[in-house]
Image 1 (cartoon, rainbow, N blue to C red):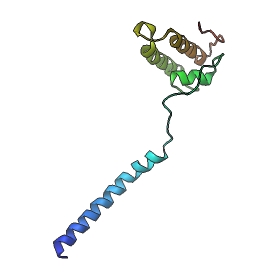
Image 2: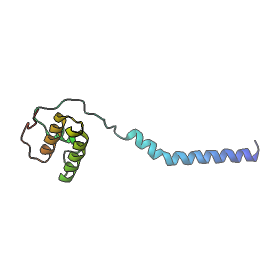
Image 3: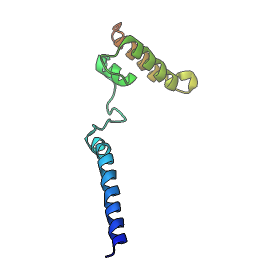
Image 4: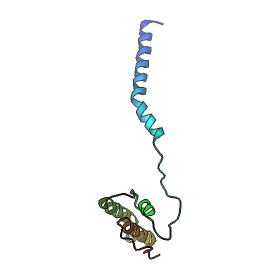
Amino acid sequence: MDASALGASVAAAALGGRFLIVAWPIIQARFLAPRARKFYYGGFDKVMTKREAALILGIRESAVMEKIKEAHRRTMVANHPDAGGSHYLASKINEAKEVMMSRSRGGSSAF
C-alpha cells in the first residue's frame, strides 16, 4: 500500500467519524422520542371531559385561553359545515371549546 492510498484511507475514516459524531444526536433523538399517535381510537363520551376536549382541539388540558381560542378556530376552519364538514363534529368542537374554557353545560351537543 503506497502513501497516497494510506492517506486516502485515513481521510475517509476521518470524514466518516466526523459524520457519525455530528449525526449521532439526531439519530439518538429519533429513536428515543415518544411516538405520537395521529388518531385517537375511541368514540365520544356521553358527557365531555376536559381530557376529551383537549384531544379534540389538539391542545394540552392546561392550555391558556389564547391557545384554546386559536385551536378552536383552526379546527373549525378545517371542519366547518359550510366548507363540507360535519354538523356533528362542529358541535363537538364547539362543546370542546366550552369545556376547555370551563363554561361547560354538560352534554350541550345537539346530537
